[in-house]
Amino acid sequence: MIDIMLVLLGILLTATIVAAVEYYKQLRRAQKEYERARDAVEDIVLSFNRQLKREAERLELVAYKVEEIASKEDRALSTAQDVEKRFQSVETKIGSMEDREKMLAKIEELDKRVCDVTASQEDLVTKVSSVEEQAKQLATAPEPRIEAVIPIKRDKAMAQLTETELVVLDFLVSEGAKTAPEIKEKVKLSREHTARLMKKLYEEGYLERDTVKIPFKYSVKKEMEKLLKKTEDQPVQ
Image (cartoon, rainbow, N blue to C red; front, side):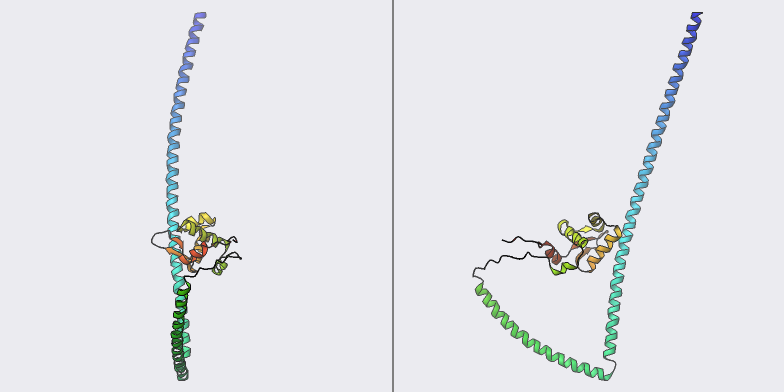
Protein backbone atom coordinates (compact mmCIF):
# COMPACT_ATOMS: atom_id res chain seq x y z
CA MET A 1 0.00 0.00 0.00
CA ILE A 2 2.80 2.37 0.87
CA ASP A 3 4.58 1.55 -2.39
CA ILE A 4 1.49 2.45 -4.36
CA MET A 5 1.22 5.78 -2.56
CA LEU A 6 4.88 6.49 -3.22
CA VAL A 7 4.43 5.72 -6.90
CA LEU A 8 1.39 7.99 -7.08
CA LEU A 9 3.26 10.72 -5.23
CA GLY A 10 6.17 10.40 -7.70
CA ILE A 11 3.82 10.63 -10.65
CA LEU A 12 2.14 13.68 -9.15
CA LEU A 13 5.49 15.32 -8.48
CA THR A 14 6.67 14.61 -12.02
CA ALA A 15 3.46 16.06 -13.47
CA THR A 16 3.89 19.13 -11.31
CA ILE A 17 7.50 19.63 -12.48
CA VAL A 18 6.50 19.19 -16.15
CA ALA A 19 3.66 21.69 -15.71
CA ALA A 20 6.02 24.17 -14.01
CA VAL A 21 8.59 23.82 -16.83
CA GLU A 22 5.89 24.37 -19.47
CA TYR A 23 4.57 27.37 -17.57
CA TYR A 24 8.09 28.80 -17.37
CA LYS A 25 8.52 28.31 -21.14
CA GLN A 26 5.25 30.13 -21.79
CA LEU A 27 6.38 32.98 -19.53
CA ARG A 28 9.65 33.27 -21.48
CA ARG A 29 7.79 33.33 -24.79
CA ALA A 30 5.43 36.01 -23.45
CA GLN A 31 8.40 38.09 -22.22
CA LYS A 32 10.09 37.88 -25.64
CA GLU A 33 6.86 38.90 -27.37
CA TYR A 34 6.54 41.83 -24.97
CA GLU A 35 10.13 42.95 -25.64
CA ARG A 36 9.58 42.76 -29.41
CA ALA A 37 6.35 44.74 -29.11
CA ARG A 38 8.08 47.32 -26.88
CA ASP A 39 10.93 47.75 -29.40
CA ALA A 40 8.41 48.17 -32.23
CA VAL A 41 6.50 50.83 -30.25
CA GLU A 42 9.73 52.69 -29.45
CA ASP A 43 10.68 52.67 -33.16
CA ILE A 44 7.25 54.05 -34.04
CA VAL A 45 7.55 56.80 -31.41
CA LEU A 46 11.04 57.77 -32.57
CA SER A 47 9.88 57.89 -36.20
CA PHE A 48 6.88 60.02 -35.22
CA ASN A 49 9.10 62.41 -33.24
CA ARG A 50 11.49 62.79 -36.19
CA GLN A 51 8.57 63.53 -38.49
CA LEU A 52 7.20 66.11 -36.04
CA LYS A 53 10.62 67.76 -35.89
CA ARG A 54 10.83 67.96 -39.69
CA GLU A 55 7.34 69.46 -39.87
CA ALA A 56 8.25 72.03 -37.19
CA GLU A 57 11.36 73.03 -39.15
CA ARG A 58 9.28 73.41 -42.30
CA LEU A 59 6.78 75.60 -40.47
CA GLU A 60 9.60 77.76 -39.12
CA LEU A 61 11.00 78.14 -42.65
CA VAL A 62 7.59 79.18 -43.94
CA ALA A 63 7.24 81.69 -41.09
CA TYR A 64 10.55 83.34 -41.93
CA LYS A 65 9.64 83.51 -45.61
CA VAL A 66 6.32 85.11 -44.72
CA GLU A 67 8.16 87.58 -42.48
CA GLU A 68 10.50 88.52 -45.32
CA ILE A 69 7.64 88.94 -47.81
CA ALA A 70 5.69 91.07 -45.33
CA SER A 71 8.74 93.27 -44.75
CA LYS A 72 9.22 93.77 -48.50
CA GLU A 73 5.53 94.57 -48.97
CA ASP A 74 5.67 97.14 -46.16
CA ARG A 75 8.68 98.85 -47.73
CA ALA A 76 7.07 98.80 -51.19
CA LEU A 77 3.82 100.24 -49.85
CA SER A 78 5.69 102.97 -47.95
CA THR A 79 7.68 103.87 -51.07
CA ALA A 80 4.53 103.98 -53.23
CA GLN A 81 2.77 106.25 -50.74
CA ASP A 82 5.78 108.55 -50.57
CA VAL A 83 5.95 108.79 -54.38
CA GLU A 84 2.22 109.49 -54.57
CA LYS A 85 2.52 112.30 -52.03
CA ARG A 86 5.42 113.83 -53.97
CA PHE A 87 3.47 113.72 -57.23
CA GLN A 88 0.48 115.36 -55.56
CA SER A 89 2.75 118.05 -54.14
CA VAL A 90 4.34 118.69 -57.54
CA GLU A 91 0.97 118.83 -59.31
CA THR A 92 -0.29 121.35 -56.78
CA LYS A 93 2.79 123.57 -57.16
CA ILE A 94 2.76 123.64 -60.98
CA GLY A 95 -1.03 123.75 -61.41
CA SER A 96 -1.05 127.20 -63.02
CA MET A 97 1.27 129.58 -64.87
CA GLU A 98 1.38 131.85 -61.86
CA ASP A 99 2.66 129.01 -59.73
CA ARG A 100 5.29 128.22 -62.37
CA GLU A 101 6.48 131.82 -62.40
CA LYS A 102 6.75 131.76 -58.63
CA MET A 103 8.69 128.54 -58.86
CA LEU A 104 11.13 130.09 -61.35
CA ALA A 105 11.61 133.04 -59.04
CA LYS A 106 12.28 130.68 -56.15
CA ILE A 107 14.75 128.74 -58.30
CA GLU A 108 16.62 131.96 -59.14
CA GLU A 109 16.67 132.90 -55.47
CA LEU A 110 17.89 129.43 -54.59
CA ASP A 111 20.61 129.70 -57.22
CA LYS A 112 21.75 132.97 -55.67
CA ARG A 113 21.82 131.37 -52.24
CA VAL A 114 23.87 128.51 -53.63
CA CYS A 115 26.39 131.00 -54.98
CA ASP A 116 26.53 132.69 -51.58
CA VAL A 117 26.97 129.33 -49.86
CA THR A 118 29.76 128.43 -52.29
CA ALA A 119 31.57 131.65 -51.47
CA SER A 120 31.06 131.03 -47.76
CA GLN A 121 32.34 127.48 -48.19
CA GLU A 122 35.52 128.71 -49.86
CA ASP A 123 36.04 131.13 -46.99
CA LEU A 124 35.38 128.30 -44.53
CA VAL A 125 37.93 126.07 -46.28
CA THR A 126 40.52 128.81 -45.91
CA LYS A 127 39.74 129.14 -42.20
CA VAL A 128 39.83 125.35 -41.72
CA SER A 129 43.24 125.20 -43.38
CA SER A 130 44.43 127.88 -40.97
CA VAL A 131 43.02 125.97 -38.00
CA GLU A 132 44.66 122.74 -39.19
CA GLU A 133 47.99 124.50 -39.42
CA GLN A 134 47.58 125.77 -35.86
CA ALA A 135 46.58 122.28 -34.73
CA LYS A 136 49.74 120.83 -36.24
CA GLN A 137 51.80 123.37 -34.31
CA LEU A 138 50.02 122.45 -31.08
CA ALA A 139 50.29 118.70 -31.74
CA THR A 140 53.73 118.51 -30.13
CA ALA A 141 52.53 120.17 -26.92
CA PRO A 142 51.61 117.78 -24.05
CA GLU A 143 47.89 117.23 -23.76
CA PRO A 144 46.30 118.03 -20.38
CA ARG A 145 44.73 115.05 -18.67
CA ILE A 146 41.00 115.47 -18.23
CA GLU A 147 39.38 113.33 -15.61
CA ALA A 148 35.70 112.46 -15.93
CA VAL A 149 33.69 113.82 -13.03
CA ILE A 150 30.32 112.68 -14.35
CA PRO A 151 29.95 108.98 -15.37
CA ILE A 152 29.65 108.50 -19.13
CA LYS A 153 26.16 107.47 -20.17
CA ARG A 154 25.04 105.69 -23.33
CA ASP A 155 24.18 107.73 -26.41
CA LYS A 156 20.74 109.34 -26.59
CA ALA A 157 19.97 107.04 -29.53
CA MET A 158 19.68 104.17 -27.03
CA ALA A 159 17.04 105.95 -24.94
CA GLN A 160 14.18 104.72 -27.17
CA LEU A 161 15.04 101.05 -26.63
CA THR A 162 13.27 98.82 -24.13
CA GLU A 163 15.12 96.66 -21.61
CA THR A 164 14.46 93.54 -23.71
CA GLU A 165 15.78 95.24 -26.86
CA LEU A 166 18.94 96.28 -24.99
CA VAL A 167 19.40 92.68 -23.80
CA VAL A 168 19.14 91.47 -27.42
CA LEU A 169 21.66 94.05 -28.67
CA ASP A 170 24.12 93.29 -25.84
CA PHE A 171 23.74 89.55 -26.54
CA LEU A 172 24.52 90.02 -30.25
CA VAL A 173 27.54 92.23 -29.48
CA SER A 174 29.01 89.69 -27.05
CA GLU A 175 28.09 86.48 -28.90
CA GLY A 176 28.14 87.58 -32.56
CA ALA A 177 25.49 86.98 -35.24
CA LYS A 178 22.54 84.82 -34.10
CA THR A 179 19.29 83.51 -35.55
CA ALA A 180 15.85 84.36 -34.16
CA PRO A 181 15.44 80.90 -32.51
CA GLU A 182 18.79 81.36 -30.73
CA ILE A 183 17.74 84.84 -29.58
CA LYS A 184 14.36 83.43 -28.46
CA GLU A 185 16.16 81.09 -26.06
CA LYS A 186 18.08 84.06 -24.61
CA VAL A 187 15.14 86.45 -24.03
CA LYS A 188 12.59 83.70 -23.17
CA LEU A 189 9.88 85.07 -25.50
CA SER A 190 7.56 83.29 -27.94
CA ARG A 191 8.69 82.70 -31.51
CA GLU A 192 6.19 85.25 -32.89
CA HIS A 193 7.16 87.91 -30.33
CA THR A 194 10.86 87.37 -31.05
CA ALA A 195 10.27 87.60 -34.83
CA ARG A 196 8.42 90.92 -34.40
CA LEU A 197 11.15 92.22 -32.10
CA MET A 198 13.95 91.38 -34.57
CA LYS A 199 11.99 92.87 -37.47
CA LYS A 200 11.49 96.13 -35.51
CA LEU A 201 15.19 96.43 -34.59
CA TYR A 202 16.17 95.66 -38.20
CA GLU A 203 13.78 98.21 -39.74
CA GLU A 204 14.82 100.90 -37.23
CA GLY A 205 18.45 100.52 -38.33
CA TYR A 206 19.96 98.86 -35.26
CA LEU A 207 20.66 95.51 -36.92
CA GLU A 208 21.93 93.97 -40.14
CA ARG A 209 20.39 90.76 -41.52
CA ASP A 210 22.13 87.95 -43.41
CA THR A 211 19.56 86.42 -45.82
CA VAL A 212 21.91 83.91 -47.45
CA LYS A 213 20.64 81.07 -45.25
CA ILE A 214 17.36 80.44 -43.44
CA PRO A 215 16.78 81.11 -40.59
CA PHE A 216 18.29 84.58 -41.09
CA LYS A 217 21.19 85.69 -38.91
CA TYR A 218 21.05 89.09 -37.21
CA SER A 219 24.05 91.18 -36.18
CA VAL A 220 24.50 94.67 -34.69
CA LYS A 221 25.57 97.47 -37.03
CA LYS A 222 29.11 98.72 -36.48
CA GLU A 223 28.11 102.21 -35.33
CA MET A 224 25.57 100.79 -32.87
CA GLU A 225 28.13 98.27 -31.62
CA LYS A 226 30.47 101.14 -30.72
CA LEU A 227 27.68 102.77 -28.68
CA LEU A 228 26.85 99.52 -26.91
CA LYS A 229 30.47 98.89 -25.96
CA LYS A 230 30.69 102.22 -24.10
CA THR A 231 30.57 101.69 -20.34
CA GLU A 232 27.60 103.17 -18.57
CA ASP A 233 29.62 103.99 -15.48
CA GLN A 234 33.33 104.85 -15.35
CA PRO A 235 35.00 105.34 -11.92
CA VAL A 236 36.33 108.77 -11.13
CA GLN A 237 40.14 108.83 -11.10
